[in-house]
Length: 198
Image (cartoon, rainbow, N blue to C red; front, top):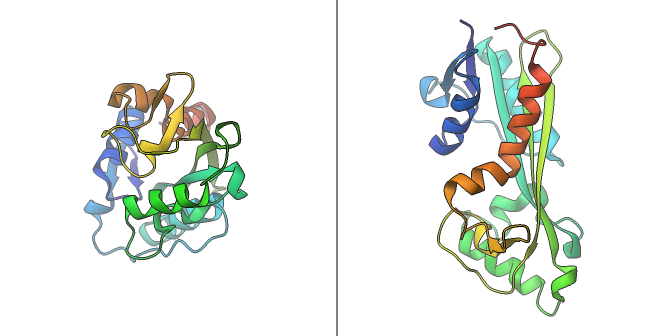
């Protein structure tokens, strides 16, 4: 069975990928390859960042590599924080500081204009082959104050209208079905059926 390296040290993210690919690949992570160089995500788009991680590591390891990049896009802020979501309030990255900055920038913006989406791009790269991409999004809106204690990042201020709760109020199972990453993973699996050998 071929090996698939997930370009992450995030155990939750790794578990998502393992669930999807263990029937096709031996799934490994960056924990299995501590010698790999750190990849600086300096692209202007999620596609660029995901591709850079996947393609750089695929070339370095000479293996099949999957990587993702994701973030929050807020319409009233012209798509910000976008690719800068994790460090929107500056270094070091801090979820609460990021939330505070977003809420401050949206102060006075009415509910109907606080639309937003979580967006994820996944790149699958193998040396000598064309990189495959998949996308996923979860639509919602930004609340006026944080609610809920599950999840991380912007989850406490991301309201999902279809469920009447913020991401941070949803159960892990429900969130995993709705999330941008889950949708991108589903799209990727559909894309690669028949493209990559088992």
